[in-house]
Length: 364
Image (cartoon, rainbow, N blue to C red):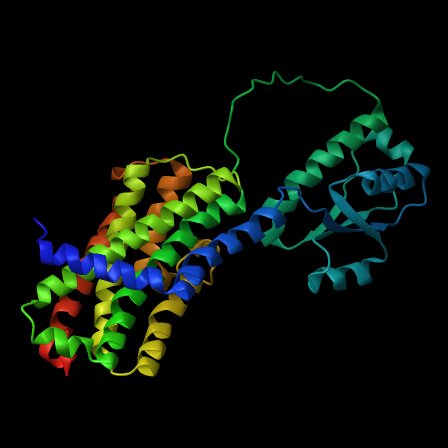
């Protein structure tokens, strides 16, 4: 497709209009930067101690030493108490687990046999707390028995990439940003142009609807790519976020996502006749996707009832594809399910935009 001089001129005009709106620049660019900065400085990578309750039913010195060893561990925040009280705290979420030391926990029994420790824990927390507890117990056991371990470990240093929450957050936050910029750039602009009579004046000029729409798409795509590039540079250089995927593939998904939400913005601008109506319809489109599209936490962690809906939202396909490339370093072929979902939404949004956006009706 060859762009005409008229389309390029209109795109330049739309870019100038955006650059003159300093509030839009602030909220669309600096807010994500501030948001990432907050998570970057707060999430310093340190593991917070897990709250663990200990019920000591033994009066032996060994049991007391064992409890003291748990207290000295940096992994746990230990609370000693009765089983009933700690069980109640566990049910209320104030404890991660409760460890019950039996009465037979003493030196004589430990020399003859292994003593079973009872653990009260929510099954959903097992994968989180059990590896930490087992590691701590093994270390304590070796100190008590003062024996050499049964095996040794040959450690091979492999440079692996540890993912922080900010690494996970960045692709979703950028997908959310491109959705906002795209919908605002097409939908809200059409409403504003209609309110100011700009569309009505453009209708009597040689400008065709195709020129008008192409110019908005080109201008908004340029804005989205520029702002997301700034966000990426800030995240990498300042916040030390790691992006291991191919940038060409990443930007390819960004462009496809931009086209989807530009089309949805055209639908919004055609349906809404006033700014108030546009804001309400825009909230209906944007807000559910903020919380259901895996921007701030994985879709898998959501209630099973809403997961089928969350998986088919357009922002879910875009953010998942961007995250798989940025965090997983996968190719476009590996994110084929996301690309298929994006392609479906491209077709659906384009059909809706072309059906709803009628030049004469919009210009009235």
